[in-house]
Image 1 (tube, rainbow, N blue to C red):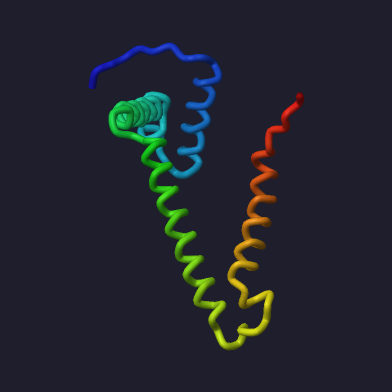
Image 2 (image 1 turned 135 degrees about the horizontal axis):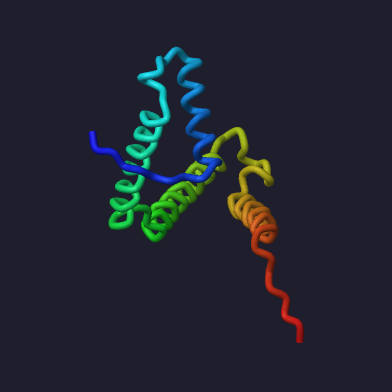
Length: 129
């Protein structure tokens, strides 16, 4: 096996020693749990992470694609809810009850409540003239 000499801070050395001690407490012998083996394992893990980051830069997370999928699903959910609401207002059990069978009234209440919630997150800009 090739040998690589590396200098680390005292804090890093202590963290590696803690891992060695933990492995020994879990039953590993001194051949399985020593500074060299643990440091080698951490370097291998670091290389894997490094390679994955390099791969993701080319085709990783896309905010535009995420926004597109999110918007599409919000629109679909909205349309489904509208259809269900329209069907529900035609139900015999709610016909004749103004608050439950009037689709325009219900839609207005939903819009007002939605606007109030949105106002909490995105306050309207006030014009100071």
